[in-house]
Length: 492
Image 1 (cartoon, rainbow, N blue to C red):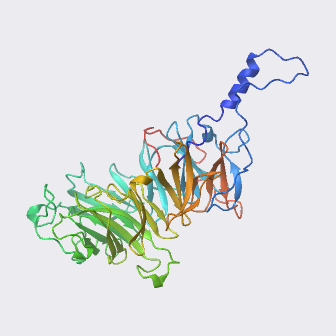
Image 2 (image 1 turned 90 degrees about the horizontal axis):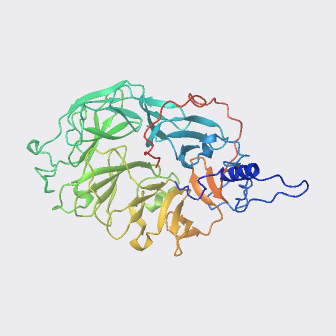
Image 3 (image 1 turned 60 degrees about the horizontal axis):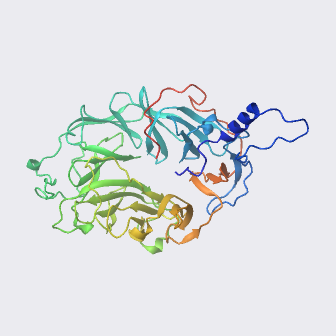
């Protein structure tokens, strides 16, 4: 999220006033002391702007200045970065690996500490969690600041609510070995040995020239239920783990305790229903994410059923346009496929699910995806219909979407005179809903609370709490920080 509109040194005015008072001779009694030239005006404590579209509620508190009743991290001389997490905000120091989880409605500190922030993830239900690392190893916090996972052994990695224990000396080029899929308490769900496919095995992996080797494997076939799925886990949800085997096939393995690891379904990048040219090289799959379609969608409009859990996969080659495909997460059924404007980079075949730079509006079911080449630099896709709603062309590079909320997209825009402003766009049409805003929306969380920047001050804006919080702060909320990490790693 953007924060440069807030001054980086918010205590400088006080320092200037103190210095002037200590160095000047006393003024004769009764004569007013002149204000130092160039002294900044006090930071406002009352919001006199107008809330942008999509932001409802009232001002709950301000975050800077001597009168602000907030944590001292807000006075960091190098500023702070603010990211939404559930009903809270993650406030990160600009000068060190220090973080604070701030309950938006009440102002309560849910967690604070020193650790290296590694990024956001989800649990099995799809709720946002935070991946951290300190001197004791990696751990994960939920949106209430509770520690929900920590590594038992070196190399254990969190993945969407489960953990994966990789083979020793694992690499993209040498993924073979013994794997274990674990629950968040460290219990083993299933273990297996993965022998990476080779051309001699008849797997349709691409050769160095990008041509397919062997006969394509048909997607949708169910394997022997007694044989656990083998491969590298790349995504998980409450019921399954998606596993990549190195070829153009993704398999879903069960998390059911009666048959852990059993294959549920599989999908293939050489499925003719994708509409890819038969002569095209075998594509590499990249899992872009798991999404739930809005319940309020119009069933008469066609497309996927409202409320469907959707898996979005990009099948990419080296030169031809990549293909987006949406599958029903429950049974692997292909819902739709569409050709993107141009080629997108071919990722590693075992990369975990990630849609870098993408934005999702869960009210309209619109997914904004950056494009590496072609006629558009970004496209907005209707996840129910599988249609491109609009796109940003090369002439629109001055517009940079920052986040989506309640059917709106908040974007930064560089004007002709070099100034920055914020635009509010309709997520489905790209129509400008508002511009020339008096307040800048820095972040909005799941509970509808926002950080508004107005006149050099940050205000928390949103619904008032219905009642006082009853829960105690999470472990570590008032304790000493545990460790420091690499200051070069920043929250996204």
